[in-house]
Image (cartoon, rainbow, N blue to C red; front, side, top):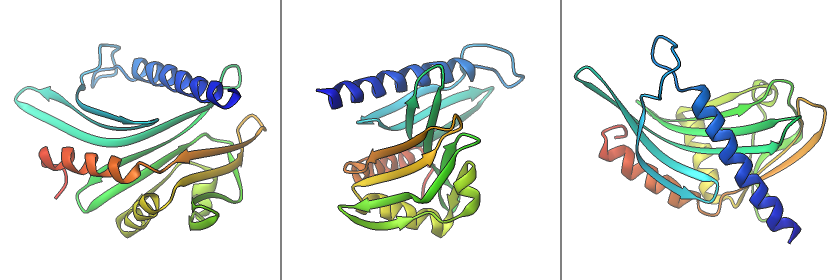
Length: 192
């Protein structure tokens, strides 16, 4: 029961965070506070993972984008803290970008993908262990392959407020998420 309540609280906090983030980013190109220009054209939820596409029109030009996102609000107010990942199509493949709050320090081996008890991928990039980081090209391909093969993305770190944190992101549906993302990105000509 306690685990279920914790999961419900995480979902509610994620929804709150996304609502606040959407309101904060609802600006036009000149930075004026206006309703967001991006209109959602596709959304598929896989637990806390989302496969999304949206578009906006400027004059006669329609811009489209698709992405996978996971937002984990792991600490509510007053010590609010969150971590996220976005997967986007790039000209030559993918970009996998993690958002880690400044002041976060990962423990040794605290940024890994597991399949059962086996570690099948681990991030050892120092810059990624101290701040936001991105994987592109073959690095992104290897990471996405590990995310499909693994069952858990595990994080262990000390957050910006000095609290020890452990996060576990379920990867059991990641192959389905990636398939949905591929279908929708190709439909819009964003992925070869």
